Image (cartoon, rainbow, N blue to C red; front, side, top):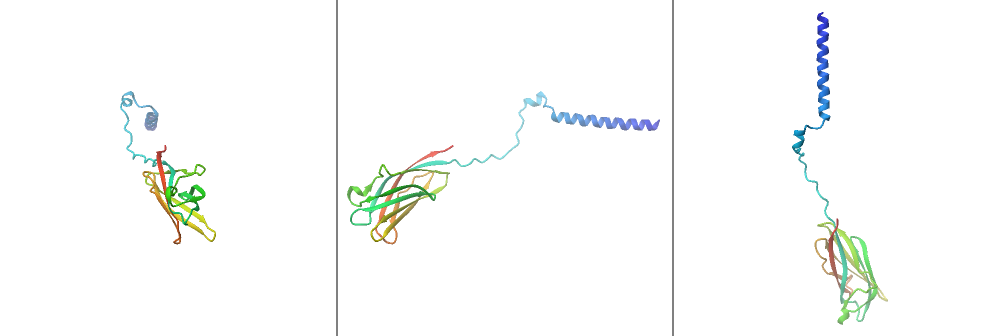
Length: 182
């Protein structure tokens, strides 16, 4: 009889353990009681998710070109390429520029593209480069100039000077309009 009592006791201990385990498993899967559900659960503290910098579209419009020195005594034909961030934004076809009188301020022709759109993030700078070329009978002249464009500021006038001590000097004036992008 003692063997049966020990076996019965072992069976009851095993059954109690099994019932407790099943009850624990069910309580983990069961919804919280109504009293606990009424209290808002505390969210775990997490660091704020950093937001990506907001992009800004900048519309760059050529307003005028001051002709300081066209390179000759009369008029000189120049063409210009405008780049931003290493990409061509637009090009001005060859035309005669004059450095005297009212013609010393050249406005973009309606046939020339003179507007470009670039996208920047806050704090980013983009180099705007201008390269001019004048073809002569004997040699050609190259003029260059650049300035930095920022999303939060305008673009300073860009002075374009001929290389190698040759004559040729222009100042490009641009208008900028910045628009935040989503």
